[in-house]
Length: 373
Image (tube, rainbow, N blue to C red):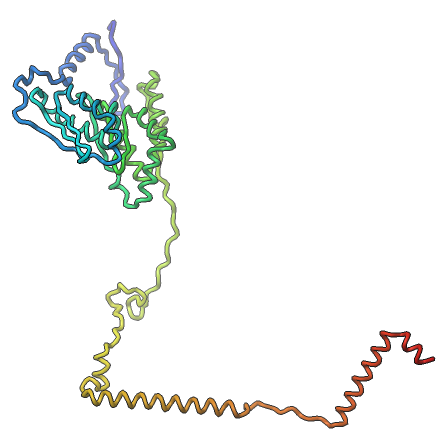
């Protein structure tokens, strides 16, 4: 058919060849017109001419580090809320701001968007980006990321990994997913035009907190972006072009189990074993009951204590006396030095003197020649 479009109708249940179906341009235009009926139209004043029946207000707390910025943009925020028929009151001395409806407010949901606008600005989102929340086609979400990690140091490292050097990783995620991301404290704020973009950004953030690097997702999105721009790959299978990153499992060495005592039928080294009953040491009262001291009077206890002290002192005195006696007596293996004869001693002295004379003569040969002459 002239002016028609051909596409393949693939079926996943059967292995039959794909059938070619022809659709005319009239059918395409008719489908487009039907789709326009389902578009969300903006809420107009004619839809609610009587306005709001009751005043609604919300109080938003302001952190101390945002006070200086909010002082600069207070006038701009007030004008934005006034254009949407809302009243904004800043109380910076009380660290809060109040947003409420007015008599001219006709949109019942605009107060919710105004409340979230103030929340996003208070948590670190610039006013130029946060004003997108007043648009009907803008979706937003706040993801708490602290609940995924218990360790504080590990949480800070993974949050910095999501941010990247100089914010490059976060900026690349924003470009590829077409979202606006703001990391502040323990949460991440997301703003986008489609729910698909928010889901993809949420997946990247959650996987980063679960120790999956965001660069894997960035590479996957870049490849898909190139394939989408290529018309030849419209009906092709993209699974072989996209990378499949899997988490590596490291084989840790197994701990050796202790051998159980087979004779007794339980492990004596395991304190949690119900059969391993630890020995209970007797208390002071149990010891007194065994010796009979528990039933003695106070006088008998003192007399027994004095007798034991006297017995210990007598034993110590005996030990001291024995040590003193051992010091005065010679040991059993002591052998006295044998004294030699006086003649042997004199001969030894003469020999020593002769050696000294001989050594002195050898050192002075001139003196020896004079003696010979």
